[in-house]
Image 1 (cartoon, rainbow, N blue to C red):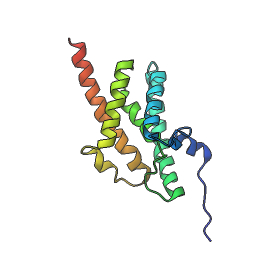
Image 2 (image 1 turned 45 degrees about the vertical axis):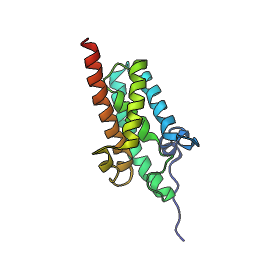
Image 3 (image 1 turned 180 degrees about the horizontal axis):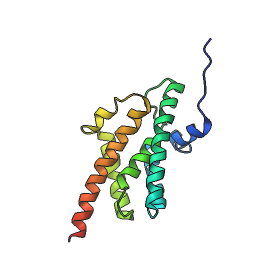
Length: 156
């Protein structure tokens, strides 16, 4: 008989983003909203924004990998730390105002859902790497579009 090792509860809490991953409808959307809120809180503190982003990425890779192993399922829908980190990447280096945050949220969700090339290629990475990296790429695409739009708007 094989002994099942359960995941560290703090790591599980962060990977499911304080239980938002268990929301019955659209847990990824709920976590993306939480990522926007976190971005609003951390935006004035650029060092801390980057530090939290890096730590959450590492926690996401480790936690998502362990969660996959614990439940025996690839990319479980309740692992939502990837959406939090992806939105933070989307809004990084921008003034986090309400209009930018709303545009960033919707663009990120679109890139995350439609997974245009090469976002779709990152999903095939093993374990938590695949779970996290497709959202990082969706966040990067969003960030680039937002920076271009912001630069254009500021030049008018």
